Length: 229
Image 1: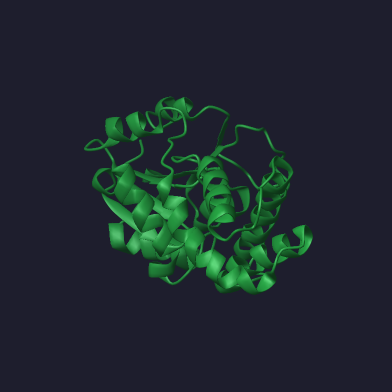
Image 2 (image 1 turned 90 degrees about the vertical axis):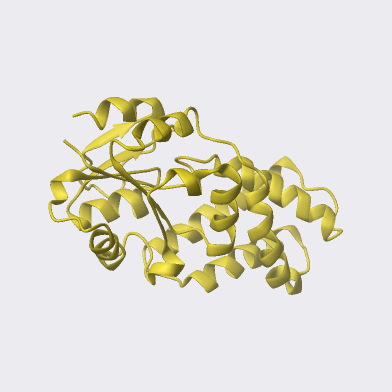
């Protein structure tokens, strides 16, 4: 029986792609960069995902990936790379302007509140996540919020989870489960930390890491049955 539920935010509770899409389109207008086409949006999304995976693998630091993803994107589309730093700062705030939940994730969280200790565990930047959590009302739903910039370590590092366990006073890891969409961040992190993990995998990506996954779901509603086990 689980007592502690650790929830990833982007791509698990909140629709990150919707926020990403709207933020990029808005900033193209703000920075007078012309039309942001569907092809450009797909390109950026792929670049961004790859850079965050490099962060989770320890191949780059967060400052490097935040600027590096836009530098690569701007190079590909022929935009002025000198705008990358300013564009990234504006992007962090713009990400929080679009609040769309994944399925009935908010209702699931509300149903869990008071029955479990529910905590947010995110690698997103402090600026972006603070705004998202406040505008979505998630800051009032979660019992604790762990943002990697505040913790000092990123998922999947063991130190991130050690900090979470210490803060929540977790003694028995069998009472803990992490729910997330990132195989390299959430699921690998849970595996390395010795806790159960539920991979929210709506597009049914392959398990390229070959690690043992406790649960795998393609619909966030299935979480309800899992946490009752």
